[in-house]
Amino acid sequence: MDRRVFLKLTGLVAAAGAFEALPVAAERRPDALVAERATDLQVASVPPGPRLTIGAPGTYRISGRVRLQEPLVEISGITHTQWISWSDVDGPEHPMASFTTFEHFDRPGMTPAIRVQGGRLEALTVAPMDFE
Image (cartoon, rainbow, N blue to C red):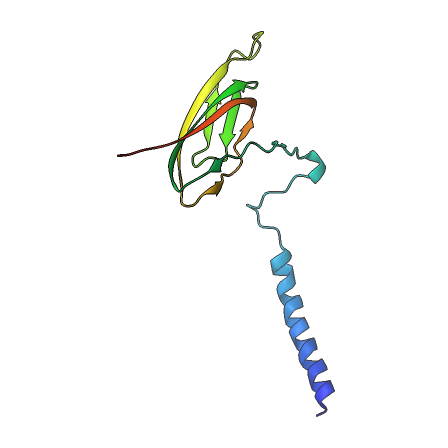
């Protein structure tokens, strides 16, 4: 048998095997969810937040103040994301809330960006923790 003919035949046999499995693979599972159209999805844009410069490895206390603008405010970019919820959304002035986190850095450099969704970061401080 010619090598080309052999390769064509084995390719056809492999393709036929794939076509047999295709209806099973394409069959919709009853528990599968139908995805929404991309135009129906809303993508939340979170502006990049400030990054802190760490001069030496170690544990640091990062504290900040956030102006609450929505009923649920998320603070991310820290080891444990924090949420602040409040109920007086319709008041004339948006209240402030404080947060504190303890972060450990293995090397000096820039920290990840701290982002606030649903509010505005008003102040941010970092202080090294001295355990001696």
